[in-house]
Structures are given as C-alpha cells and as structure tokens.
Image (cartoon, rainbow, N blue to C red):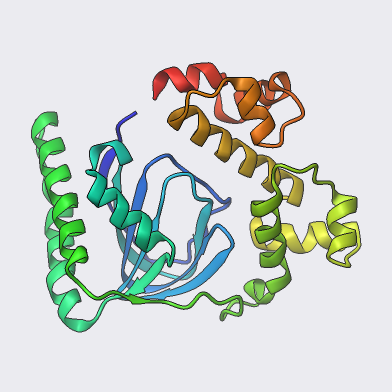
Length: 264
C-alpha cells in the first residue's frame, strides 16, 4: 500500500501522544521549534529545535513535550530506490540527528515552502511530494549529520525511569517468548503492581499490552514483506496459534491478517 504525505503541525500547548504507534512507511520528523521527548523502539531522545528523527517502517514510537512546531514527511518504502532505502535504513540505526546552522538555513525554508503547496490535482500532488522527499533525502546523503545521544534521564520526572526503558528493550528483543507479568516482575525485581504502574506511567499501556503491540507490529511486517503463511508468522511473532493471532489482529487492526496482506 502506497503512502505519501507532508504534514505540518504547530501546537501552542503541551501535547503528548497517548500511546506508542507504528506504521508501514518511513516518517522523517523535523522539529522546527520547541523540545520533544522522542521514544523510538527502546531509545529515548531529547529533540530540540533543529533536530531530525527518522522512524523506519514498523518501529514503535511516540513523542511528548510542551508547545512545538514540526514538519513530517511520510513515504512508503516501495516508492524509493534501493539506494535511498539503504541510506534511510543506515541512518535509522542512530535515529536522531542535529542539523548545523548552514544545513538549517537550507532545509527549513524548503520544508516550510513545500508544506504550503496546494493542488487539487492528485497526480500532480503525488509527483510533487515524491520529488520533494527524494530531494530532501538526496540532500541529506551529501551532508555530515550529527547523531544525538539517546538518554533515559530527561527533564520530565516521568522519563527518569530508565528501568522501564530496559523492560521495553527486553520485550522488543524477547517478544517471541511467552511473557507474563510474573516473569517480568521477577526478572526486574519489582512487584507486579509496581511494574504495571511504572510501565503505564511511561508507556500508557501495560507490559503485556506492549508485548501484544510489538507482536502485531512484527506480524504486519511479515505479512507485507514476505510470503510466509499465517501459521508461520504467528509462531515467529510469539502468538500461541494462528487462530489466536487472527482474533487479536482483527480486534486491534480491524481486518484479518489475510485481508491486511491483500491490501498491501
């Protein structure tokens, strides 16, 4: 399924995403003003004005913070060349970067100008957006980008809980295994009540809900990029059976796994 979009957002008040989310296309996130706490997979970054973050397909992420302005570019993997995909995959290993003054003087006016382009012709809009996004990628390929260091101790007391990031990282790695509250609580030396409260405070969901979201995310990835059958995918993603995966998938995504695959 093809997705291509540019989105500009200007929030005058604090705005927090309620839940972690994932999608099957690239998100190129440019922060024009303000500060944002950006969580992606098991990494946490403090983005400041002039920062850039890349979210590859099927990566869990969310942002929180005070007033801000940002411009996002969204593009499906299949719309890009092998070289462009390789570049984006390569920089996604570091996730977040800071632009220097010269880079900002070039890219920010370009982003603002592009976000204001309007046309009723869907074909012209698509061609413009794709050409523009490819231009942005080509520009970044020529630049020395400065990676940001992930941190688990940010200004918000809510995100000083680095143990929760360790639990998130563990679930991201071990999602194929049977994960229970008892097991997680024992492994990280917490009571079940404390584990659930601290995890929900930071992630807005329980550890088991997060594990389910992670498995569904992986299932979507296999469905859209491989020919594996539903039973194989269920096993790879840690679901006890294909039938159970189908029930959870339809409840959370709205359609069956096979119908999801047909739409890709």
